[in-house]
Amino acid sequence: MLARAREDRGLTQRQLCKKLSRKATYIQKIESGETKKLDVAEVMSILDTLELDRNEFFREFLAGIALDL
Image (tube, rainbow, N blue to C red; front, side):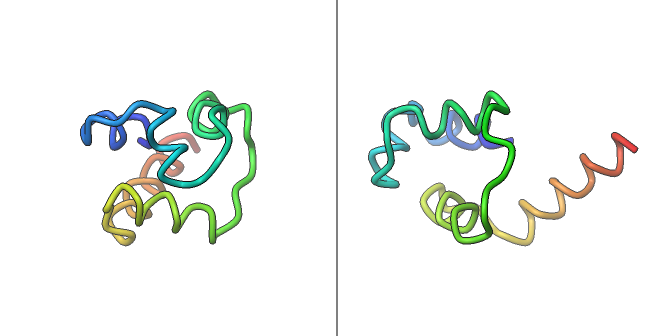
């Protein structure tokens, strides 16, 4: 989900990291699943930077979880 949203906006992982003032590997670790936990403030910062609708994102996220059950 994150990679698709980032790519749809024409951003590389490195560019998004720069916008978030994070280390160059921050987004790569999230997208690859290496980072298992993010706090709510981090998620909201990423969503806001990508200009994603929070409600829509969480609806899609929760629907994905339901499919895995």
